[in-house]
Image (cartoon, rainbow, N blue to C red; front, side, top):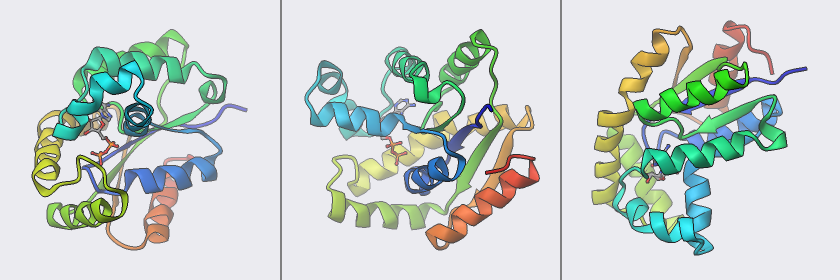
Length: 195
Ligand code: ADP
């Protein structure tokens, strides 16, 4: 049996990470978060972590070449061979092209792109609250606003790219965690993707 290949896309604070963990369980696929990979490397002070630490703290994107190489390695690990949920990748057109190349080289393709939407003021509020709990270096109001504008500029255009391929399902990210999950599962089922 071959698993599902999904992307999660949406502005910072839309709840991608929370939903990714639940969906990975629901669809029995690994959740792969580039943000988590970078943060783990920063925490462990690896060479990669030292290289990206200040980029993350400023809310900028890590260079495509670095990000693409990390994802390519991760997708070749055994647990991701037959399906995956990518959270936070791709985020630029170059990353879209690279992911296309990686998948087609293996004769694979994406099944769906889940877009989680959320109002800017709501997500800023959520992230400021998370800052109090988790203390992420990029969760200050100034950096959050910057991450939003980087998202609008570099990542939001990807929605059109994937819509043109008829892959996008759009889900409202406001409401209880379980409600949002139920919306995603229903929207994917409409596309013929079963848990
Ligand atoms: P959020 O989407 O809430 O900002 P993430 O955990 O997805 O949080 O990402 C945190 C940071 O990690 C980003 O601001 C960026 O610096 C870096 N990052 C994550 N994914 C990518 C990516 N695909 N390309 C470049 N940088 C990335």
